[in-house]
Image (cartoon, helix red, strand yellow):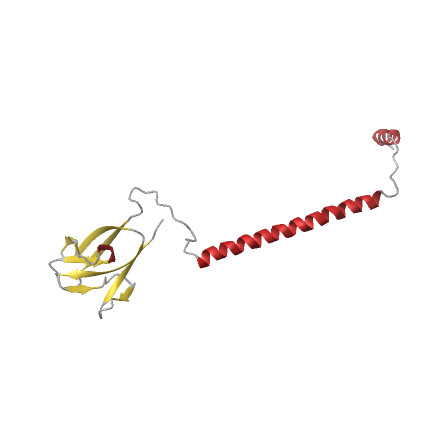
Length: 167
């Protein structure tokens, strides 16, 4: 043996000798069992709380009108969004182009002529879905040729649908 091992053996021999009581293992096992029993009830309580809260959440989502993801309007426009609508005349050259829709109570709003075949208007609207159509020369109502969202207007015509997202 080398010197370090001899020192270690001498040190270990000088440590006080303790004896373990004969019922030591039973006491340890009893304590472990008691902790497991407490953990069992606590674990069941946690599961019950999670299930209860989930049921309350699902009830609120499906049986009330509360929004799933509330939106907060912080902007100076009080929740309004700017939307630009454009109209391009393909063949005829209209003198005037206007737009009318849910956002204007179906009153016509004149569009600004940009060049020979295009008109534009910028609207401030709240988030939501709006039906609209272009009014050519004050007479002909047509859906937006560039919009793929369309719906029957109830009078035998078609309106375009504008979706304005919140956020």
